[in-house]
Image (cartoon, rainbow, N blue to C red):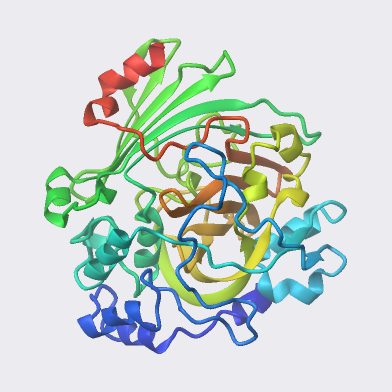
Length: 457
């Protein structure tokens, strides 16, 4: 941990100026203008690093590669890239300053099989122009509500491209752009120590009023809804039909998250106030919490959040091979960890945010450290500690640019439970239809009555 945190860089002058104005202060129009100069529209450092191993951001992926048709699994835009080198337990010491404590722990836990293939870095993250315009507006107006448990005066893009504190940074992750409506058929698996697994199929729909082009902060404040999420288990037969509905609110002080579940045995919809925090995730075999989903979600009120700065890190990026429909689940899922030959790692800059459990508050995680990609605000790695201050779990998000949108988002999230030597892989989609970002969803699709209908099908 000491070696790693010594590599956390001092924040740039821009960040320091913001910090000096107060924890919840907005930035000035002059500071926001930097989003068109030395910073990217999302607030990342536009320039590359000193040795050139991280290049300048020049707009990310702006068009799909030749041969791609919407609805396909995404073609690799960098098919000719070769492995530059491989990190193994044998040469780990050489690279520790570019790894998190959790990543290092995985090498120590699986010394004979775990490795990281390092490729050329491509800063491929990109978003629609109207999102960039919204971020510029948000930069000078967005605010956190009481104790950071909500957001106001923001719409469409991330609210805090130049974050002043850890809360603002984690809200950027929560509110990063992922299109306006999404339907996906994907699944999860929790291999045993021997590598055997049962695939759990999931149909998920996501309605994102916050992201609708032209949405205004005033409209969003009236409805107080950030997004609505519905999930149905499609297989195995013993779980099929179990369903979940979540309404995530913009001001969680005014109205906390609302959730409902449909139980096939009881054939009824019930309110589910416990679908939050450290409640076990759906069919997760106890290997992730509810707020692990999407690497982190939900109210941040149980933690104190600290923005530690930035550092360079090897993270999964442009993981198109892992995403490919030419790969089967059996190729991915192995004992101990997913197949490392299918994973692409690159060097990128990340924000480091530390969350420490508040006094007199409960959660099975005492501390969480989030490593957030500077170009997309996607949490890419999270190190999770138990109440004994020992590493408990390590979360890793494997990302691609869904260039038909465009947006950078996960294709697979993996949570490693260090202590049980097991893991859960969420978002398996290689053998399923691809995400549909053009789906037409309606508010009536996200009611308790709709959840009942969905569960009975």
